[in-house]
Image: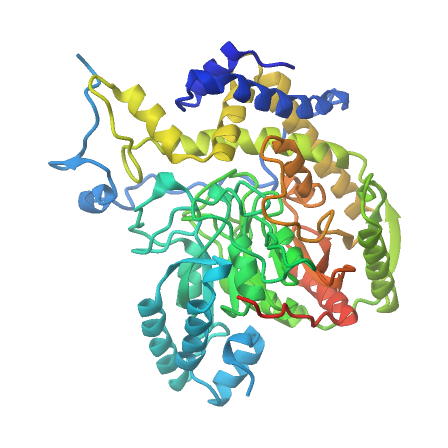
Length: 95
Length: 494
């Protein structure tokens, strides 16, 4: 499987990572190499095998549907790069 | 008296109980050793004030006769664990400045047991790497040196933990293991590393890489210490829904040294092409030792072994791409400086380009790709089906009466820093060939130092156990450790 420069640009955007146009060919090469390595999986007969979702055969735990924490906005915001008036601040989203 | 920082947990516990040393003295010995260890780049955030306060509290607790097995034991904590008020950034620039407002369950359990926090340890960025070279702090350095004096990798991702334990900067350290990140560094540094069964230890507050594979465990000087420390780390935890609701047994009590009648499997598929003779010889020697101790050595087959690496390198990046989506420059860590007119998408993309190193970027992009429409079935679902087959291989072996499996821990001894081809990520992935299988199957595994190569570097073997039977696994590892009698220490140069 070979990744083109355009596909590399698309993957970078899906992952929300800015990649310089000049770096796209190298990225495409890297990704192609990794995907080639994964091609081995096509040798395996997986007919009738269920995809594994978890390693321990256990039912997901249930808990009571109640509020267990909260009321600490200053702690939640304490690590934010930009917090104002009790909110996370971001660039304008809607014109 | 021996230098206090060189003690094992078991020896320190005894000395503390007898009143021969204090937690404060142990802590000072470690803090001095850390101060003199800059060349190893193992500790990346030191917390000496916290350590001294915790040591005083531990001494008080011992005086009151309320000591737990880990009370007063000075530890290093891998950077990936959130510790309240202490920088916790998983060796990534994107979390620079992040000081958690909460504590991971594992570290909370250790502090509740009275252990002492010395500081945070170097690692690969987000635990993605096998040489500690992807760290934003620069690589940790192995206290063992090559014959020509070249600096060696301590392995990864828990490289700082392994280096710190091997160099006696702490009595023990925490690590995490997603594809071998506890066991490979342990093998490279002549120390013991235990990856518990998935679900034995809570993942709450451990910065996530691949949630279905990540598991924290102890990195120690001896198997006994691993048993003691696992007992303090493990718990059930309502905050982690994948953490098992099982009682934590007394792992140390399982160390009887009696392994007579245990059936230990030797998987033929682990004899890979190009494996150095020394590793093969060590593997044979280990099997002999276990046979001499009364175990029965049985040839077994784990037919899907060769597909474990490609399956891992689909599943782990897929999970990483979801987990690392949270680093967006909004709630914590780094945010890129924006240009006039940049909107929120530019903020995300620039922040993540600046904050993530190249290997992390590669993995989240691979993850995004294998999860994207049109490829999900071909890559991600296929990998999950292969994963089911890999687990079935182990289930079959255990159902046939195998108690544990003996395999090499790594395909080589520690290699020089900077020797891995940066332009060939797949070559680095091959380091994990013996370790990833059991993460995919959720099984416990332990690396034990068993010998040295021609250059005098430590080599380790790995025992793989049945799920949630860490006690039995530790006992077999204890027998192997005793028979191997590995006592070599690196000559101090740092």
